[in-house]
Length: 336
Image (tube, rainbow, N blue to C red; front, side, top):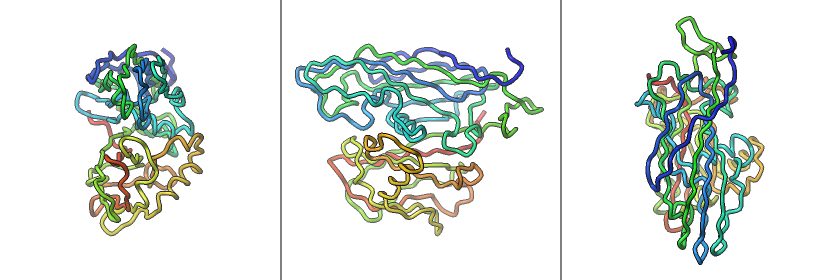
């Protein structure tokens, strides 16, 4: 092994597909894990009448949920496939590999899709990306857990019309820092900061919007002690992304207001600040980053809040089933 910190990328294995099932893969615990790359391949065979209504982030929806569990008890990340794809788009300024493919709705068509999605443990939009990574030192377990969508394509389309999914494979690649720098106590530290790596936690919640409201309130954090770095919101009308649910949003804790903005201005700022291509294809997304200058120390320290962190929104209910899916990005130490 090289004596200096070295980037090491390697295939880790394959996750078995079971329709609507839950499968796992044990991840190598050998260095500092920067990211996983998930290569999802599958075939959709349409019925005599083609499917109708591709849903939000269609090609990522076969991954119903992705979880990363460290040490058997620390849920580092828990997100649906559609949020993996959406965040990858925002953090890289372009569609993830394969997500731009045309979703074929033609009668009796047989189409194979090939999509690659990152599971990032670093902070791609932070001032220092390497403030976070997953130090696997001393972990007895590190599991990637996949909850799969159904083989009848009902997770991909409003009306599948007899479409069937087959030939599913999920290959997993890991990107590590081998032989990382270490402090005197053996803890792996960043080569740039000399500090131990923090954990990037990603989780989400879905909130039902049952009627229009000028003061719809959703709790974003209940003073958990996390350092909150960003929120990604998806506006879903019958599981299709739309830009017409949230009209304005105020984020507050007790008497302090972090932002009070129209949703259209947030969308415009996202396109400008994140240099987004294909932004028109990403209807429904609102990215909110409250930290100043992308710095970890300027994130929202929820331990210091005088009340729950809330989003108070002017909303217009759209469709039959209207939801807000809200993903929270936060940082903290790894629970060992």
